[in-house]
Amino acid sequence: MATARSSDPVTPLWRAAQVFRLLSCLYALGFQVAVNADLARPALAWALCAVLLGFSVACAVAYVRGFGRRPAWVIAELVVVVALMCSNRIVASAQWAADNQTWPTTLWATNPTISAALLFGPVGGMAAGIAVMATNFAVKNYFTLDMSHNATLIIEIALGLAIGMAAQTARRAHEDLQRAIRLSVAVEERERLSRHVHDGVIQVLALVSKRGREIGGDAAELADLAGEQERVLRRLVASAELPRDGDATTVDIRTLLTRRQDDRVSVSLPATPVPLLRHAADELDAAVGNALDNVRSHAGPDARAFVLLEDLGDAVTVSVRDDGVGIPAGRLDEAVEQGHVGISKSIVGRLASLGGSAHLSTDVGAGTEWELTVPRAEQRRG
Image (cartoon, rainbow, N blue to C red; front, side, top):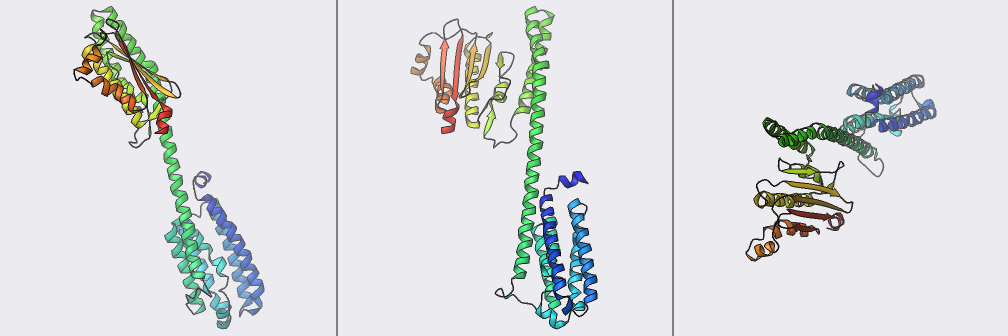
C-alpha cells in the first residue's frame, strides 16, 4: 500500500484536500453549535453531526493512506453527503431552511466535489459539484442563478474544474517523467552493452582478422570470417546507439562514423559521446564518406583508410588518412579546371557551410590525409 501511495502523483493534492476537510468540519461543528437552538430537532441534529464528524475522519484516513482513492469510496462519500444535506428537511423547519444555508453547511458539502475531481478529473469534479448544488436547491425549495446574491453554484463547478485539471496535469507530468526515466535507463544499458561488446568481442575479432592475414594460408580464411563478424557486430552496435527520435537536436557523431568501418577502413573513436547538432553531424559524416569514396576509387586496390575522431571541446575534428598512392602536386587544381569539383563541393564546401575547415595533405607515394574540423561555437551562433 505504501508503494502504491508513493507512486500516486496526486498524493500531495489528496493530503491538502484533507486539510480542507478538517477546516470544513470545524466550520460545520461551529455552525451546529450556533444554530442548534433554532432547529426543529436539535437532538437529532447533534446525532447527525456526530455521524458527519465520524465519516469525515474515516474519509480522511482512507484518502491519506490511499485505500479510499477508488470510485466506490468517492461515490459513497457523495451519497452520504447528499443524504446528510437532505436531512435538513427533518432537523429544521421550512422557514429556517429558506433563511439559512443547508445543514450541515455548503462548505463541508464541497468535500465530495474535491474528491471526485482528484479521482475522476475535471468532468467528474464538475459533475459532483452540480449534484451537491442540485441537492442544496432541492432542500431549500428554490433555484436561482442570481450571481449578485449567490454564486455558490458557479464556485462549486469552478472548484471541481480547477482541481480536476490540476490532478490531470500532475498525472500526465508523472507519466512523462516515468517515460523519460525508462528511456534514460534503456539508453544507459545499451551504452554499457555496446562498450562491453566493443572492448571485448570486437577487439578480439579485429586481432584474429589482422593476425590471420599476417600468417596467411588457411589462417587467411579464418581472418576473413573474423573480419566479417567484426563488421556485423560494429553495425549492430552502431544501430543500437543511433537516436530513436528523428527530431532529436543533437547526435553522437560516433554512431554515424562507426558505420563507415569495414575490412579496409579502421575507425578510432573516443570512449565518451561526442554530441553535435544533427545537421552538422550529418554533413560531417557525409564529408567523411566522400573522402573514403576517394580512397576506394583512387588510392589503389590494397589501400587502407584510417578514421580518427577527436573532441577538442570547442571543436570536433575527424582525420581521414590512407596509405595509398597519394596525389601529385597540382592535380587537384587541374581537376577543378577540368570541371571536376567533387572534392571542393562535397568535402571543402560541406565544412565551409558549417563554419569549419577541410585541409588536405598528400604527396606521391605518401597517401592522403584530410583533416575535417567543425567548431561548436559556430553551431551555437547559427
